[in-house]
Length: 383
Image 1 (cartoon, helix red, strand yellow):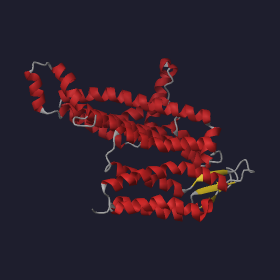
Image 2: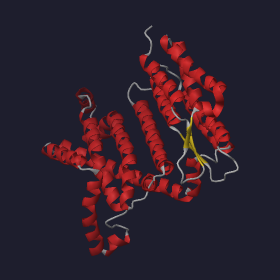
Image 3: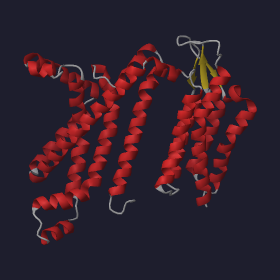
Image 4: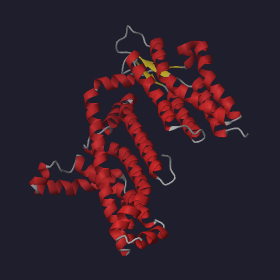
C-alpha cells in the first residue's frame, strides 16, 4: 500500500516543532516577559525520548497504512492529545518556583502547534477508520477528561488559568452574552430565510434582486456595517422612547444583532431555496398523484427531503455568527470579544486566548454537532 503522505508530513512537522521550539514560557509575574523553556529543559532527555515514541510509531504506521495500522495510529493520536494536559502539569511543577506566588507559565508554540497538528491528524484518520458512534464519543471524551483532571491536580501557575480566575464572573457572563446573541441571530435569520426563500420561489423576479442584495450585504466589512447602523439606531432611540426602553441604541446589542442577521441571511436563504427547489420532480409528481395538496407536498415531501440542506445553512450561519460576534464587542455588545480586545490593548496574550479559545471551541462543537445531525437525517446517512 502507498504510504499516507498527509499523516507522514504531519508527524514530521510535529517532531520538528516539538524538538525545536519552546514548550512553555515562564515569567516571575504578569508584567515581565517570559523565558522560553524547551521540552528537554522540562523533562530531560528521558522525558524527551518517551514523548517521541508515539510520534515515531505513528510515522512508521503511516508508511504501511493498513486498516489495522491506521486504527492503531488513531489510538496513538488520541493518546498524545490526552497526554498533553497532564504534560503541562509536569511542566508547571518543573519550571515554576513555588516560592514566587505571582509566577506564571504560559503555553509555548511547541504545544500549540502539537495540538493543531494532532487535530489535523485526527481528522485525517477519522475519514479512513470507520468506528461505531459510541467508540467515537469515548475517544473524543478522553482528552476532555484529561484536561479536567489536570485542572484539578495542579495547574494553578498556568497563565491562562490565572486570567480566568481573576475574571471568572465576567467570563461566564460573556459566554452567556455570546451564546444569546448568536442564538437570536440564527433563529431570526432562519425565520426570515425560510420566508424569503419561499417568496423567491413564488415570485421568480424577486430572486435576482434578493440574491443581489444579500450578496452586497456580505461584501460590507463587519466594522463598516456596525458603523453604518450607529447613526440611524441612535436617532430612532432618541425619537421613540419605547425603543430606548427596550435597550435599542446606537451601540450595544441592537446594531450587533442587526449586523449578524444581515450576514446570516445569504447562506440561510440560499440553502433553503436550493433545498426546496432541487427536490426530484418525480417525487413531487408522485405526491400529486396520491392526491396531496400543495401545502401537504411542502410539509411532507419538500421540507423533509430538503432538511439536510437547510441544516447545512444553519451550520454555516452558526459558525459564522460565533466568530463575528467577537467583533461586536467593539460596539459594546458584550461577549467573549471583550477579552480579545482588552488583551490586545494590554499586550497580554493569555487574556486574548481567554476570549479566543472558547470561541474556537464553540465553533468546532457547533460545526461537529450540526454536521453529525445533517448526516444522520440525510437519506442513506448513518442511523
